[in-house]
Length: 281
Image 1 (cartoon, rainbow, N blue to C red):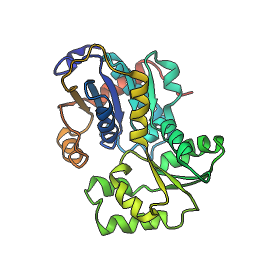
Image 2 (image 1 turned 180 degrees about the horizontal axis):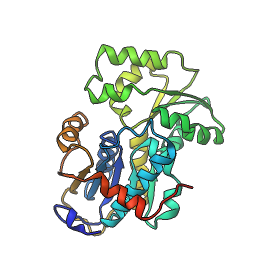
Image 3 (image 1 turned 180 degrees about the vertical axis):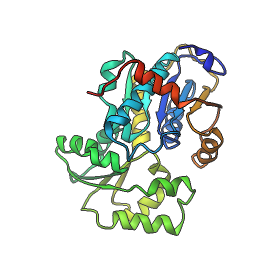
Image 4 (image 1 turned 45 degrees about the horizontal axis):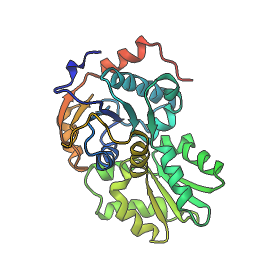
């Protein structure tokens, strides 16, 4: 694949992808840890949301996106989407020679370190919770797990209603019937933007685990400083499969849209999926 798709050269960038804008919270955390790194962010907004789609379909999407990013010369790929992490890892890691990280395991590791009672919770999209990806890993660590799908919270974030009565009403609806837990994983990349509101509802005795922050710590520890990077801030290119203006408008809520936004026909990703005859294992 030609690097001519990039509007300017990047030095060993890290690729980051999500179904939409939620993964920008991961990009923001990564840039905080690796400020001199270049990044390519891909928002698959033409096929958002992933959370209600079959796991095999999401895995196909993830393969095509990873192949696209590999063709642009990325040094590694971050799956900044809980649903895609649950559906595509570790299958993708076995198919590509570059490192690939997902958001789930770092969140599990953080929760296991933070819990005092061994009772943890996780909230996420329908797809993430239905996959059991967090629950199985937490239970394997010996924890007792409560889980709840909270599908409407994504809309609350993207509509800029994080501090609204509607947000509080939904959070009470989703969380008031929770089991006794002392740790709660925010298992969707939109949810860190609701951190303060969620903390008010669950109380200070419950530690919140930001999966974006936990993943950034993991990637930083794996990659370390880039010897080819300068002291200047790293650059970002955003590829968007849907409407770039809609992406920029919604992403402004998260505040991580620095760099150029480049339209990418979703047919290019579909071509990569089909040309490799990818079949999820």
